[in-house]
Length: 568
Image 1 (cartoon, rainbow, N blue to C red):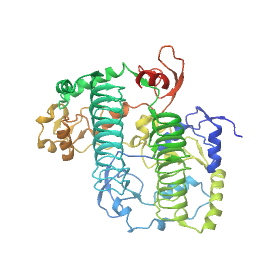
Image 2: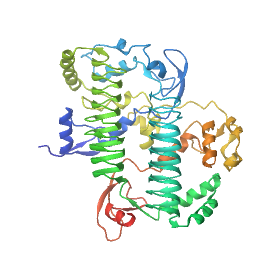
Image 3: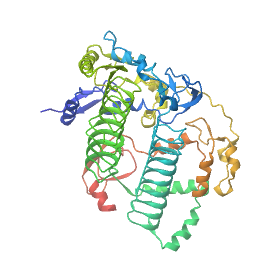
Image 4: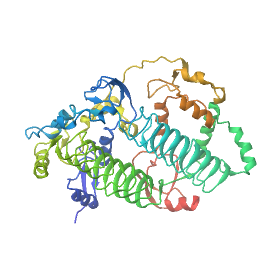
């Protein structure tokens, strides 16, 4: 029988507890207990994930100018996506023998700098040339996700269609500036809604239709700021809000955000789940400290943006589609036994691999397809592989890698953060755990100083027409100066034809912020990937719970029982 054990994180020096069920999981998959706390493990994984920053650079194969997640000064060899996915090169040609006189991670960083990487992570998608981390999608632009169509400026679009400017959308269509929306249609400026349609400015509503400015409603129609109206009165009143006007949208948004604070928030956005903690979780069982789980996970811990029948896995960012028994990995689809790896589709039994497809029994390989029993891209027989891998694991323990901050990496830890091909500020890590350049470098992360923007603005955002009805096609020629004083992007942006068509159809004003700043504003509205123990704020209730609402926030937070009694 295992017992709980408290350890000190190598990175942040905080105490963290490893529970008996954790030790059982580690034993099942044959790995040692971690030496980094859950939060530092997550930051480390996310620091290998650049999903939004795109650069112009030269393809190292064709010499064509391409768009890539790797900037031109990167030390890594990069091939344009069409070539990387072709048979014009063979990743096995880069295979090397394992060197027992050199630490594993020192060997691997030299190895990965030689093997070509894909310029953009695009799989089975059409007309998604300016996207990254996108799979089986069509006609998308600056979007990441799966099985989506006609989506623009979306982070994590799953089975979405005709959506613009959003985050974490699932099985939804015709959404604008919305976050965490499931099974919905024609929504604007909405958050945490399920099965809603033809509405705007909703927060945590279910099965609602034709509602405006509403919070915590269930099975309602024709409500404005939670007040019921007749159908005729509703549509007459709706005209007063004029969502085609930018100034009007700002006023409505300010009023709505104040209105939200009057209502209790649920301890967590967890539905149809059992024995589960975290936030934004659906159809899950026995999942602890998990966030953004779509369509279910079971017997998992420390997941972020995963689901789709993921089972018996820990410490995963983006994992699912019937995957299982995986740990400390990123981007797992239809896999089993994926350990310490980044991006694997339909693979089994991988250790320390990057960009693997339809393969099994690989150790420290990069870019392999339809292969098995390989180490550092060198082919072995089954017997040779099974004899050599245990020796490599032992060597990783006998000759560990020590990073520049003195942290020790033996077998059982994800890649050291200083091996990431990206600067911390280029990655998802900086969105959820923001650091200054000084802080990032002090913590052992890389940093990328962005180049000066090459485009000069032709119009300031504040000088754009207020109402979309006054905008014509000439706007497509303009370079617009972002209205943010602290722009997260290049400082300027343009409106593309598909975007203008969407705004006209939805009666939405032109944005005054660039796509990066719009994304940053959405991230600010999301709760942290962290749980706090709090007491229910309903008078007379002493229930405690784990929640993402920090104790110093103004929000009224109820336990599950009190919230369900209040809202239903």
